[in-house]
Length: 383
Figure 1 (cartoon, rainbow, N blue to C red):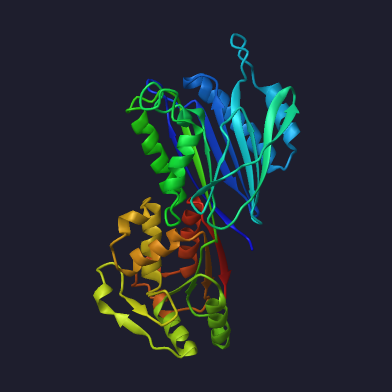
Figure 2 (figure 1 turned 60 degrees about the horizontal axis):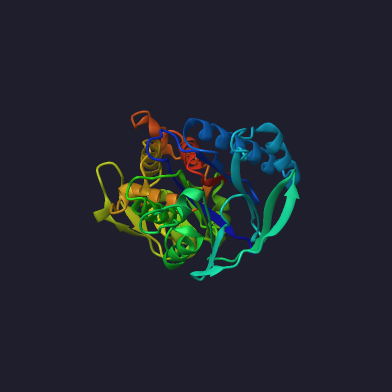
């Protein structure tokens, strides 16, 4: 079974500095997620430049599946070494997470990753390799749904030094804190936020080292399928409903005519809830087995406008109209598949109606573009 990786990040720069001396990059392709966390020597602008250069070079090479030795060698030859302290330009942690649940983790002078399973710390067994005179540690993880993998920079382990923890928070104490808070229902970003809040409190608000946190949550992919508009040929109605309802995850119908087609072919009543009507969006309806039934073009256009405005899910958390409900569903999942019917609705060709009623597909494409900007996978299938 394929797994899905959700991640959250948090950074705090050292007090008195305008830039964080660490750098984080995370990217996803169809079968894997790649992460690079680099801690530049010192702090401030120079550390930021070195760390950013490290992550940029490493990320490009890892995305092209180049071997570890070549990545480390390239970093060694490209970036400078401190001539005074004879220390590396930057430390780093690299990770490649594959959809089959296997992850390859590598670190060079960076804190070991924390692996949590069922809210218990799991051992991460590293193999040491000598590459270009540098001791590099590698590990292969076999991950399961519900696991967490957390990467941090030294700034996390140094929190509280000279105060609550004379020698700093340390890996063991930090990992134990994470173990207690790895609740299955929180998001990766929520978890990263909790760690960062604790770190800031340990520093008493005066952060003495750059802090970087990357949290990965291993879970199933969340999907939603949206059916909007009747198929171009009426004979395809039944097949369209069958394809729509057979897909996994959340099911959403947008459009009055479309809802009637789904209701008829499923043999289930269509009930309209007039209390959910607003001045901007028509009411939602209900069909047993369908998670959301809304009006079509006006609701889709409202969602498109909300996405363009940069609104977040929490802003519409307590709203119950069609646009807010649809937006929440779209933002809660990882992959959205649109079935867009190509039948012409005569009402949408009326020149007296607003221009946004003209073309359903163009509105869906706008929504898809904005969802992709928010790291969502979106596919569109015309019918």
